[in-house]
Image (cartoon, rainbow, N blue to C red; front, side, top):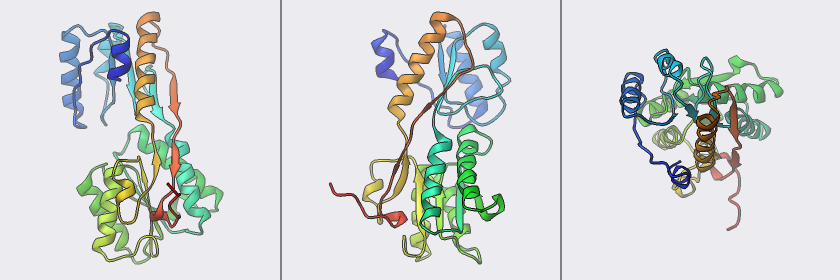
Length: 256
């Protein structure tokens, strides 16, 4: 985002809400007081009723990574539904039927869309919603670790775990090692979002790879459109994902 904004002669102020909706509201107020020209927001979970007063003042706003479906705002996200669908379809096509899914933050669009993609794939293989073991890891390491342990400690241990972000995927692998379960022989593991050390883990981690650079560039382009036209039309731009298969789901590593 910063590179794309710099090319337009814009300066960027970065703020971190740490997934706290109250902190988000306070930070947005501070930024507006500083007379910003526009806002790119990765919304935290929670009510965004506070945004109404800024939209009435015609503040240009674009959301990135997550969408706020109850507000007339353009959004730029990954194609979360398709990415999760392809990952789940791959696991099911390998003959794995007992699937556990570690969800991220509840009630945000990324979690909802990824779960919908998983359910679509499960439906195509004759599985119902109740056939998927769902645990919530809140997109955090500690909670993801606990969720993975709960999956592994069930009477009918899942044949695969699909964790909805990189922190929880790492945590799930730690839990698998902790329980001395062999991956991928006894259980397959899939993550959402690639990261630098994913290929260096034991075993290397299969992931749904996102394209954050493309998301950032597109978000700046969309904000420029809103600023120039004054039309904050509710539009969703989905950036394609890519399934990267490594040994954690039982696939051979591709040659270098």
